Length: 143
Image (cartoon, rainbow, N blue to C red; front, side):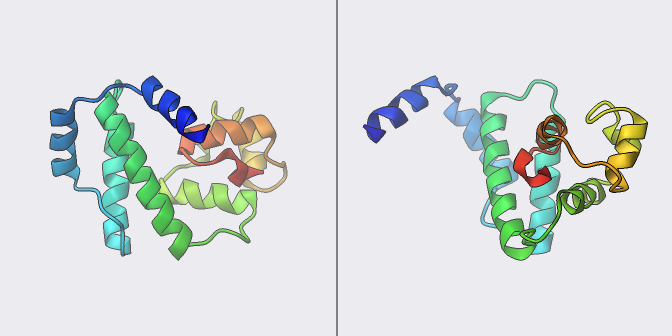
């Protein structure tokens, strides 16, 4: 039963151009991240791909690979088990060099953003979804 499910899921994914994918792999050279310097390079490559207005199927696949490698490294080296939703938000803002103004229209007006960032307002479910999409992380981190 599970095999049939995987089969169907694979058929729904976009076909990728193996040559283009191979060229992108050679250029980016993703690998298991073992230190902060490698993580920084992976983050920079991920940001370049995220900045593309119309990423190709190959770029999307590399993006997912980089995201998985970065998450694995950061989960092992910077566990956020005890982090509050606000800690997670502040960490992601700092890591991405963002100011409160950058979150206006992502989670609400400047007043709402200010209240959330200063811990005066809890992050709502809708805001968590929006932040998850914005930062490309699991929205549950903000709940």
